[in-house]
Length: 134
Image 1 (tube, helix red, strand yellow):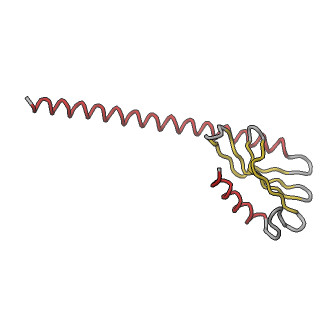
Image 2 (image 1 turned 90 degrees about the vertical axis):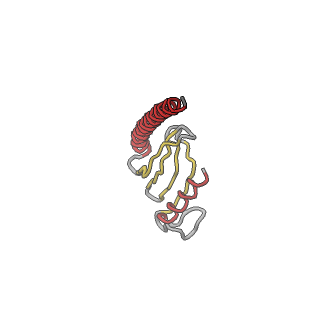
Image 3 (image 1 turned 45 degrees about the vertical axis):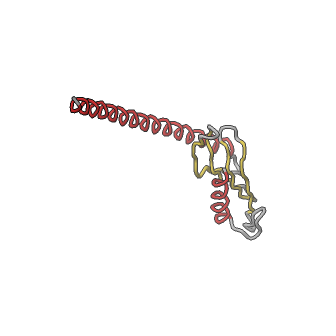
C-alpha cells in the first residue's frame, strides 16, 4: 500500500515542479519583455530630450539611459556643451528634473565644487557616487 502512495506523491511532486518551473520561465520572459519596452521608451525620450535642449549654441548629449523602477521613470546621464561651459547632469527625463548637476568652465576646465578637477574624471567619480546613493 505504501508503494502506490509513494509513486503517486512522486508523480504529484514532479507535476508541481514542472508547473513551477514553467511559471518561473514565463515570469522571467515577461519581465524581460517589460524591461526591454521600458528601455526602448527611455531611449526615445532621451533623443527627444537631446533635441529639445540643444540649440544653435548649446549641444546636449544623453550618454547613458536607464529605466529606474523605484521612480518609475527614465534617468539620463547628460553632458551639455555651451560656448563657455560644460555641464554634467543626471536628469529624470520624464519630469525633466535635474537630480545632480556640475558645471565646468570651457576655458580652464575647472568645475564647480572641485577646482582643478577635469571634467571626465569628475563625471565618472560623481556619477558612480550618485548611483550608489540613490
